Image 1 (cartoon, rainbow, N blue to C red):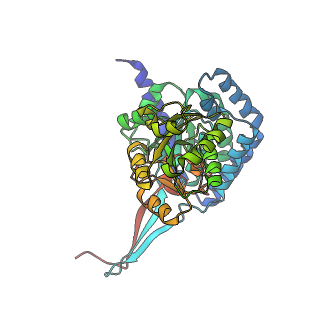
Image 2: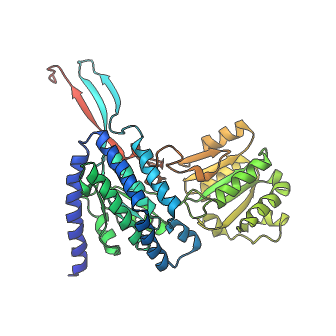
Image 3: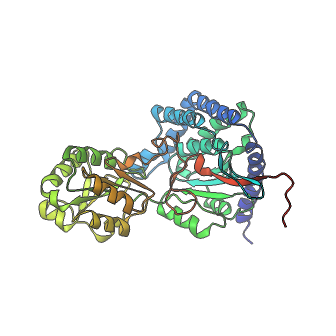
Length: 420
């Protein structure tokens, strides 16, 4: 028998039992205590910024991936401050547990209430971005859930430093430190143990590339809230304002190319392609973007690199944009349905009726009108941060904040009723 899997199972048993006990305590705490843990953790993040940046510099020294993924890994003073602000913004949100979701009275006088409650213990597996640890921990604390996080090996030192600050916040608020735990190992065997730990973990959340998400969905024996790839589209309709379209597309593609909300494919209406395409290409070329264009786009701009069929199914996460020319909104919607990942898709148009038609008929978790796809972000939605972007059809869709990490229970109040 191979001993290694037994080691990981033992680790999960130990950490999971601690998380389960912490979750039971956290679920009974009041909102002020959970909010204090977040504000104290924010203060600890700011105080520990030098140590966090030093740890991140070690991770960056060992990193050998693409520049876009390096940008996801990189921390700087502004990003540490953004993490701290995110925790404070989450603390300021309404208590997701203090909600009566519905209440009604039966003919026999029974009063039935549906009440929000935590899910329990969350397991999260993520890649690259160390700020995900702080965001996920904060959302879990706010919603009364314990969480066990396993980050990618490339962010190991950064995550450890961030975890120290979050633990300090829990300790200062008198809450169990085991409510937020990091994996003790970057070995992939630990991931396998997490995926089968149904006795200890109530929900697994993968946040990373297609390979990670597919593995989790294939191997998990625990319910999965998947954060799928962001194969996002921006469709520029024939009535679009050119200046608006240029500004939005440049932001949607190039603000941060390595985030899941980045636009990966431009769908451009044929009626305006001769006049607008050269302007869009010039704008993005100045920002060092390259292109993969279909035949109709190349007929107008032969210098563009030809797109392969698979390019329209590729999440570039880099300064590369696929371009397809379409004849109207229905062809744009058909392309999105065939090639998209149901993450985020946008239309740019001055025609309100066309916009309404697009928004009603696109099946994405988030659809937008005259706005950059990079607004698909928990912070921009007012959630403070996000634990991921859910693209499945069950439980939650779009940015997942504290409210989305609750379930519910029923409370029944009677006056002596018995069932006939």
